[in-house]
Amino acid sequence: MKRDDSLWKAILEDVFDDFLRFFFENAHELFDFERPFEFLDKELEQLFPTNPDDFSPKYVDKLVKVFTKEGSEQWILVHIEVQGSSDATFEHRMFQYFYRIYDKYQRPVTAFAILTDRNKGFKPSHFQQTYLGTRLRYDFNVYKVLHQREDLLLKSENPFAMVVLTALVALKKGKITEDELFSKKLVLAKSLLERQFSKDKIRALMNFLKLYVRFGEVEKNHKFEEEIALLANKTKKTMGIEEFVLERERRIGEKKGIAKGIEKGIEKGIEKGIEAKSIAFAQALLAETDFDDAKIASLTGLSLEAVQKLRVSQK
Image 1 (cartoon, rainbow, N blue to C red):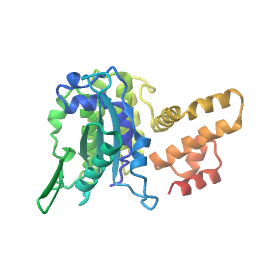
Image 2: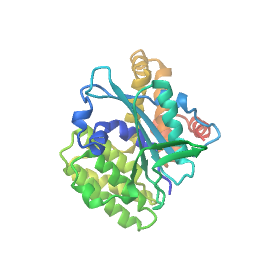
Image 3: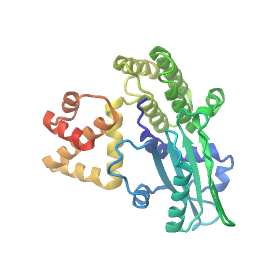
Image 4: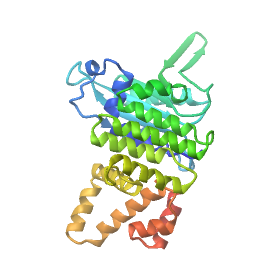
């Protein structure tokens, strides 16, 4: 099963306040939601450099700075790890994350392992080591998607429950027919559109559903888009795949200061700015879709040769 677990990075940012409320019943008493969250992706990468020889990462990590209500200068670090396969070294890696994060920031850390794999017996919960009278035990929060009840999640008014439901539907791929998968995905989409969530959260959750639950038959993706358009009563209420990946790249670019530079470049008619935008769009399409090089070239305005070079560079 091929799923893009990196989509978790985006959706966790979009509904992180709901993530906290989902796991902490008294979240409004614990956390200061008036203070913005800080996503420490760059800092996490410095603590755990990416292995250039690993072309198929099996997990996704997020490190988030969250302020509590205990005082203006009090804050904790929420470490989230999304694990998509069984791993005998998982507990040890979770402990490594803890001691490196704590050593750098000297702040309280709460860690969550969200397990999205299919192995019913895989549910690590702690790291332990004992040697000659010295004992160490590190426990972390564990949430196994496979063990969750769909009926309870559907009753939940928390947007993060829709993220878990999406992951549950994705786990059914290969075990049920494409038609059955289509029906389950559509039911979930209908439920989402009926919720009283903000437009931004509905859009983010719908895009997560579209991209995370994939069909083997390309035609079903188009059919699903058509069904959603009918449900929304207008075609532009929810974004399609192309619009979503472009919007996400724009949002990431703004954080890095790239998008503003591109906008200024466009205003001045600088071709390099336009090309950078097209390249960013093409890179997103290569990462998030199964489009061939010719289609990506037509969507971005880049030459076929340029797209082919980008594909090689991303492998």
